[in-house]
Image (tube, rainbow, N blue to C red):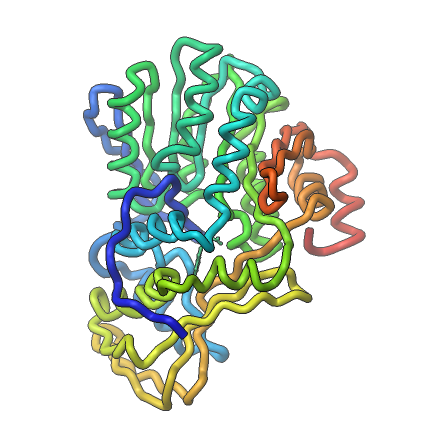
Amino acid sequence: MPWTHNRAGPFCPHVSSVVDAPSSNVMSFSMAGAVRARSAGTSSAGAQGASVPFAEDVKAGLSASPKRLLPKYFYDDLGSTLFDAICLLPEYYLTRAEDEILDRHAREIVDAVGSPLDLVELGSGSAIKTRRIISAALESQPTLRYSPIDISPSALNASSEALSREYPNVTVDGIAAEYLEGLKSISRNGSVRTMVLFLGSNIGNFEPHDAVNTLRAVHDVLNDGDALLLGADLKKDRAVLEAAYDDAEGVTAAFNLNILARINRELGGEFDIKKFAHRALYNDALGRVEMHIVSREAQTVRIAGLGMEIHFDRGETIHTESSYKYDRARLADLAGLTGFELTNTWNDTRGMFSSNLLRAIKPLSTDVYHHVGRKRDP
Ligand code: TRP
């Protein structure tokens, strides 16, 4: 299995984050680039330095059987940069496919929602894809408020400041927080529509019931007629999917293994990274790519900061992430379960990826209960 040393990649069109617990910091970036900081909720778990939740989650995950680590911990500064590099890989078609869709249809998407609108983004888009929507919106309204929510303060800071500089008519209100916490602190302007962007394959990283909970939390902050633009990778040939998550140069391997390096850096772990391998497998029955870290040999690893030693059998795995693949029926189900109606779907020309416009319907339609009764997961 290929493996390379961690190395920083170039600029990426999208910074992704995956969350499942409350936190954190809220920062605002005004047009002039000034940074205003307000606090949202509990403790701050910044991208740098050990945090209590990280230590606790690592301890619990590596004590569990089978072992697991939470995907949100991929995105420290190095991890965010490695993910930027993944977006440029020939095998990782997702970013380019979505960008093609937004390049062709941004105008249509904005028109379908109606302007003026405010934009909120989950997992701050650092570049091209978000800019396509911003540019399209500015064709029909003179100014725009954009509130990106991201778990990585440094990624958020960099992208927010760049956007503020580039678009003098855009007010960037960056929120450094996990999604659910960040959503609670966005300020609503009652007279304009809100469109929430949830791009990339972020939704795919949620287990089905967490995807439902997250979209319900989005729905909660929206008014009737507001919209969610949801990126979703589509089910397809196993070989194409597995290559996208296990590229020939080993960048994805470095990204996955960086979570062990992060434990070394922040928790005094003694993982010898070379003794672990990256594995990505498509689980057809569950419709998801599963990412694992595999122990190449039997070994015991000390983590000083946790005061524990972890034993690995040869071939034992740590499950680090799943990436669920969707089809239109599943997306329509997900919309129905969360108070939305799936009104439009755009695919790229190769039919690899979909951008979906979900319209908020209030109150949750009774159909929701029908769906819940019929089926537990979307
Ligand atoms: N959101 C991305 C996806 O599911 C995350 C991702 C891409 C990822 N490559 C990865 C996560 C490799 C773990 C390992 O497409």
